[in-house]
Image (cartoon, rainbow, N blue to C red; front, side, top):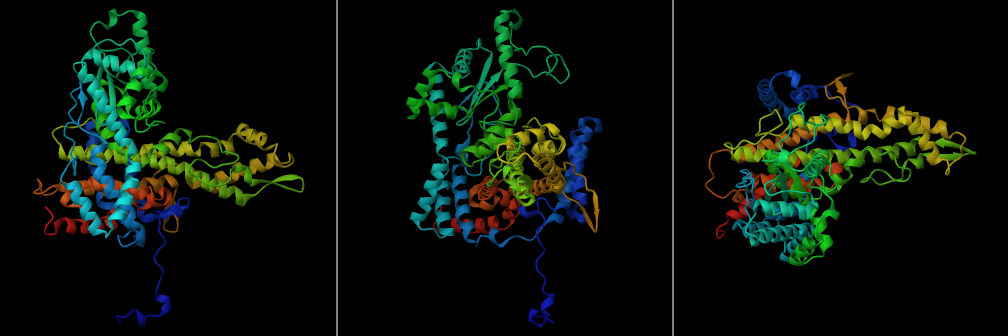
Length: 613
């Protein structure tokens, strides 16, 4: 039989339900066939354990584990939803937005405008579509033709993207003004760098030669000439020795001067973490310390109020130790800046430090929509009772919001790591410093997995407290007391804590290695699912990068083959993700193999038509 019409009706089965998807986040099991991949990912995380061997031994093992992961990860492939294809109505709009953002990507950073560090990586970061390229108007024209836009429609979308990226122009004006001001003083001399540092960070007694300056069109790195102390050595965290500058005559400076500088360095060291309320910048910054005269001067040049200059500088300025510059500059200047300038990752970074906050009475965690935990405690017959259905509704919305913020952080760091991988592919002679034990041309999954597992404990913290901490339950009882009867309240709160911890157990499990669950399945958890999905995204990015560099030197500009342009792939992933973060995270790997390839094929065809230069 060759016709489906000749088959019995009941032989037509429904397509299998998706496994890695938003709806299945708290499901209890995964296919047992996925166990080998989880074992590999757990082994990859353990590369960071120094007890597992020397760095050289762990790097060798990392190469083997990475190769095995890449060979076997296609076993996780699932059917692709129809809406991810280029023919879907929604795809046409958001992919157009992604292409228009790609046209702006080169402007999200630059080669240094000022550089007293002599940083190599930023001099020639490889771009698929450089700023000012002849390809920019040609790609726009091809986009209009390939996706059949009327000029007015495309113009409307462009204006929306102009609004989204408007602070990019302001950052350019600020750095151009600062560079011009330095030039007017004879250049970025040691004295001028120290003066600018004081203008932005306040009157710390810097001397000429204490501070280096590295400035791109969108980021300002002040670099202190202080060596990073080795772990466990005098001067390391917890050693009791004050930080110091590695400059001539340091020990002869007045004690008060040394103390003020050491305190500033210590404050920077304590705040230089991935959590930041001023993304894409990080670390210590005090808006009130900016010299009002400097703010007014920059405001006049940029044609904006001084407070806007101050707010914008807060997203641009960072302090590093000079020896650590190359650890950060590509990752931040080309990896993170676009995530704020061309996308909207910044609000999730801003709430990430709050992920451990207690459960709120009247609201869910930011990003969720619905009533707070108080909605689960109701009065019946003069007593307080627990509405279990309302409790589950609250907890699922609240937990998904917390998990999404943590997931966005992991994704953003991976996409920033990708900038370093791209640099390593195209500039192999200039090896960047790397904490990861995996090949530098790949993604840093050993770090990513560890980051996700640490976040599990954080998003679980308020739920663990409610289940295990009598004090936390007592505080919730006190907060609810004005709203509901005292009778039965303590018992209802006790039940709520135990119920949530039991029924949402997959959300709180931070283990990664597979555990047999019987029936051809292994135990699932939100952590395992997120790590598996990030591994799939990493695979897509690594394969795209390898394909973009295959075949040796290009014979035509990269932009003429949009499907090979990894910068466009980044914009596509980010724009698709931001349409619906909680849902689309689980399809980021699939979009690149379906709609992206189809739409890029149309773009290439339009660019290749006779008459296109």
